[in-house]
Image (tube, rainbow, N blue to C red):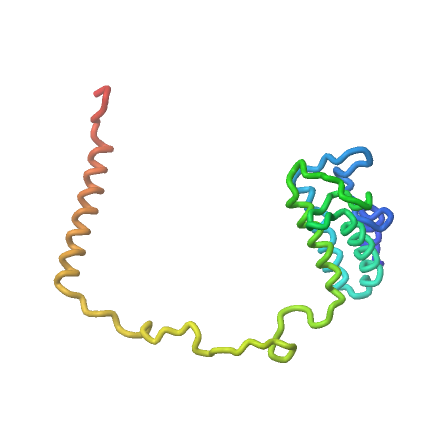
Amino acid sequence: MDGLIKKTVEHFFPDGIMVERACELEDKVQCNVDQHSFKGYMHRALATAAIVAPFTQPGVMTVLKSSTAGCVKSCLADGTCGFRWTTGSYDGDVANGPAGQEMSALAALTTLLIDQKNQGPFTNKTGGTSIGDPNAGQNPNVFLPPPPVTTGWRAGAGILTAVILASMLGGLAWISAEWGENS
């Protein structure tokens, strides 16, 4: 693995399982709401590195697989996952809600999909089955000329203009006048 990835793995993946060093201490967890999702960000970043720099993939995938295995062991049968992936069981950490733990677990699981073939959006050459419609979203009435202006429309526009102008002038007069409680 490359130097930066090697240091990242050494620091954040002791024994091959992700640990949030800033707040996941040996004797307690003092993570805030956001920090509970950081494991997922790290997993996704490493998976992205493995995709864009394929020479890192063997080492990165080894650590992602072992960390994800630790993550899965922290989950209950109903899909609720814990924060401490190194314990081998659910830790019950829900002080800041389970959203961050669930996001991290989902990210860890999805990073293992980078080995799958036919990644990305399907096309008609790679298995897509949608049938296109070149006329979708077109409205033939868009290009019709607007209807002619009638006397009623002109009268309505004149009345609306007079009301707005009178309101604006009345507001300006009220603001500039020295009417008030102390005048």
